[in-house]
Length: 84
Image 1 (cartoon, rainbow, N blue to C red):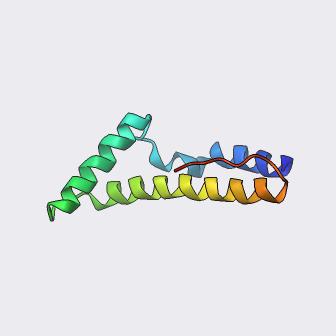
Image 2 (tube, rainbow, N blue to C red; image 1 turned 90 degrees about the horizontal axis):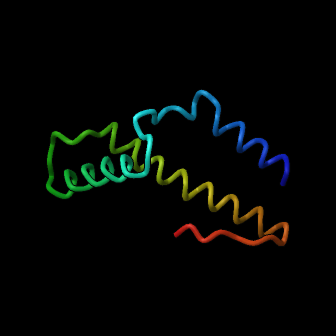
């Protein structure tokens, strides 16, 4: 578990983790996700696909990280997280 934590901290601060530089806060993420979802629901062809993909990818990554954490926690008889 200690190795996993060290690896996770290293990956969080690696240069590739800065792919979403313009998402400095949860409010910014929410604004981008909401604008993308509204555009898709309105069949807007001028939707920002890159921004929307970044938004949805980041959210999916958080969910997947929580799932991995829970799998490791259950295997080590630890407390699990309830992300959603």
